[in-house]
Length: 453
Image 1 (cartoon, helix red, strand yellow):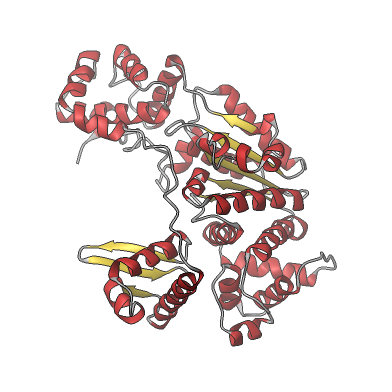
Image 2 (image 1 turned 90 degrees about the horizontal axis):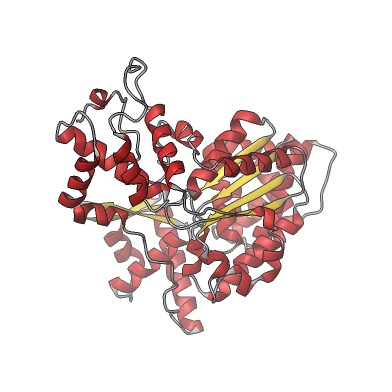
């Protein structure tokens, strides 16, 4: 294990992969290090003030290439709102597992459970039912609120999150139909309004990697855009949605918002379209210095702010990064690790060039930018095949439920894949995972499948 104290650091301050370190014990500190883009930070702060002061619900889109700092912006908003505003609840979603409002609703509920606990939804429903204020909603949603408030929590949440229920289960809840796209859209609107009208808090919904929807069929992408537009239109206050994505989500000639849904684009004002251009060299150096400062041990006052780097080595890293924060952080992290491994007291420009040459293939691999998201070729199937596949998916869910929510992939195939080739069955598992209904967990001798509850 490397001892970073010899560099007057508590740890390597630069995330290993350069991306924002989600789940790190110092996540909040990293979120505050949005350095080198003063105007950007001011703009994000102003969005939070607008939400606090009652601005109508709005959709904000943060665009940037891979490694430009989009996730960092969302995390800055999350922690900044927690620190400054008691009437704002930030909910972060890494990515929506598919398209459509059902998938967004599923992700929203999971983020509530993670950040606030399942009991928050129960109390929200109880608060509404005990209040005099009422709003118009479909009978199924009203019966859901009654069910979750009166002890039928798990069953009610399964309906809300899009799982198919048996007739008797729906009867217990007083619900007529399983969740669909229309009811999911209305459910989201109702929940946003309840947060504000019952608990007096506004939801800041932060959704990362929205460009993932471009992997899906054009019709599904269009429906996703329509759902977002209607959701924004139906919630007049108490909510702000911030999406981050690559520019393809807007400008892709086949599936971008401009092409498929100009009406959604009209809901995004110029002020709410935030683009992240490459940083200049000085800004990149300030960013690197801020990371070093954040993890400097207190007794290290005798060292320069750039230690263990010399000024010229930081300039070289800034040049090589091409203005992308992720590249700069990756390179700086590699140089610190290599500096310790080679017992270098300082990391100078010559050493950086030598490591770049010695570790060329490794460095090129970690810096390699992913290909632009493109959709797979559509797989056309007959209506009868679709019904058969849906039946198998339903059987998979039933088997998992009977096995306590977990089973190996092979045993699941034996129990639910009769008549299918393994490859076809495994594809259906991947589809269910994309829909957010199961998780595929890699084990040493295969996969274990877990039901998402």
